[in-house]
Length: 130
Image 1 (spheres, rainbow, N blue to C red):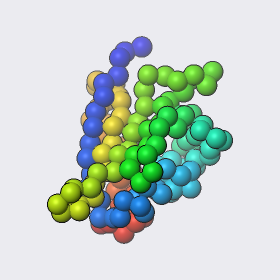
Image 2: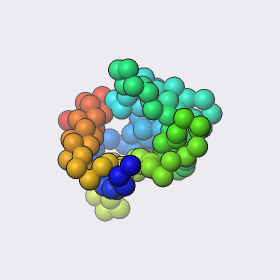
Image 3: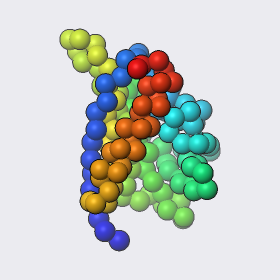
Image 4: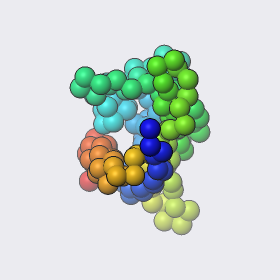
């Protein structure tokens, strides 16, 4: 299996950090924009899209700031890959943005970036940040 590459994208979002955090850290919030359905059992989250299902472990979270999900294999063991959603607030302007950290195969970074752009667009519509 090819090594995936890490990439980061920052999206300006017109929202309070507290509201945004609810949408990135809870199964109900994530299922409104990130996946068709999201279930959690303790620290384990199941993300469901159409007929596919991926499992991740909530590796870390900092209330109101960020969440990091590590993808897990069929044995519930962490893989080396994760995605992180980090809320950034500019000290001076108080502008809010969402930093996405993810991994993709080298030749699929553009595709993965576009997927995130679409999902964040859905999120912005949900919270009225368009």
